[in-house]
Amino acid sequence: MGRCRFTLVVLLTLIAPLAAGLVGNARAEVAGTPGHDGVVDMLVMSPLSITDGVDPIPQVWTQYRPLPPEWVLNPSGELRGDGRPDIAFQRPSGVPVVVWAYNHGESHDIVISFWEANGWSPIEFITNTADDEIDPRVFVMGEGTIHVTWWVEGPDARVEVTTRVQDGDFWAAPQRVTDLNEPGARPSVAFHGNAVWVAYERDATENLFNTREIVVRRQGQGGVFVLEYIAESEYDGPIEPVLHVKPGKFWMDWRYSEDQYAYAEISSSPGSSTNLETWTDPSWIGVESVRLLIARIIGPAIPDEGEPDPGDPTEP
Image (cartoon, rainbow, N blue to C red; front, side, top):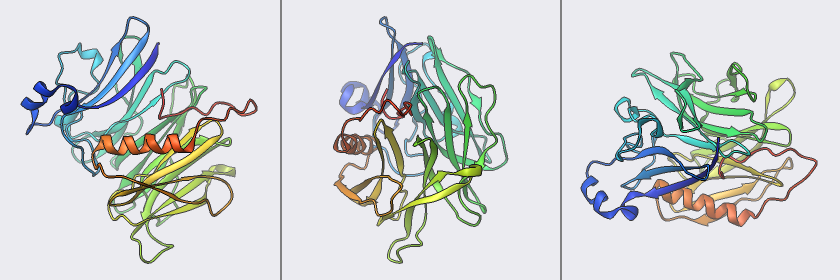
C-alpha cells in the first residue's frame, strides 16, 4: 500500500473543453490512480456546482474518464442513487478509505471500500437492515482502528456508530449515540483524549430563535455517550457539523448561516467560544475550501509524545 495525494477539483476549471460537453448532464467520479513512486492519486471531480441535501454531490458516482475499472469506485452508484462519499486515510500509509450509503431502493445501508495495491476492494456492508441509514462519516486512527457513524431516517430518527479494530474481521454492533426520542442527523465522528466523540445536528432546544443546533457527545464509562457541548446555528437547512483532530488540536466546524461557517475548539470545559468565517461559495468545493481555511486558522499540530496519534480524516 502506498501513500496518497487527495484532490478535489471542479471539472469546469480543470478541463474546459470536456466540461463544456458535460453541462446539463452533470457527471463526476471518485477514482484512485496508482503512481510509479508508490503514491496513490485520489481524485473527486464534478463539472457543476454541488448543492445541499442528503446527497450533496449530484451524480458523483458516474465515471466519465476512460480508466481501468478497478481504479474507479462504485461507478454504478449513480444509477442506484447512492449517497455522497466520505473519505479518510489510513496512517502512516495514507491509503484512502471511503464510506457511503448504498441505495437498495426502499432504504440505504452503510458500505465501505479500501484502496488495495492497485485498485478498490470489493464493497463491504457495515449495516444490512431495513432501516434507512444515510450520510455516513469515517475516522481512521493512527493504529488502524476505524470508526463509522451515520443516522437513521424515519420515525425513530437517531445517530449510530460502530468500530472495527485494526485487522479485525467484524464490526462492533452499532451503538445508539442520541438519547431516546432525540432525533439526530448528519453526524461526524472523531477520536480524541482516549474517547470516541460524535457530533450531530438536531432540533433546537437551547435557543427559541433557532430551528437547528449541534450536539457533541463523548463516549464515557459503559459506552454511554455523554453530552459535552451544544452549538447554535441560524441556518434552517443541513448544518453538517464535522469534527477534526490533529495532535494537540480538536475542533468542529458547521454551517452557521446563509453566508457564514462557524468553528470552535472543543474542550471538556463549557463555554468554548464560537468563531465565524465568511463563506460565499455554496458548492461542495466551496464548503471544503472554507473548512481548509478554518484548519489553517486553528493552526499547526502540537505533537505530544504522551498521546498516541489519533489519525486525521481530513489530511492524507
